[in-house]
Image (cartoon, rainbow, N blue to C red):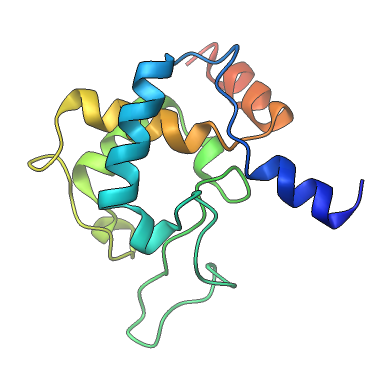
Length: 132
């Protein structure tokens, strides 16, 4: 597979066979673009090359959420908590969205960024969380 093929595939979100509905995906896209894309990129790809390196102020930059970083290691419950409570406690700068977004919007945002996870990453997430 060439780089352009991989990039093209990555830009096409996957919704079929996932836990979320098309409606959740569409809502999630709207909310993600308006609330999250400025830090995480429109397609959840991240906007900082090395998101593991601390910023000059000691905080961590926003990681990509497209399956190439660590979001897939966390169960849905933890992802919801992270969106609601923000990233300050973990050394990041993400604000808490618990008072800004409804429960439905939080779930939808997660659905949206998970749509960029490839099948292998998504299936590992499902398997890891089956016993959670």
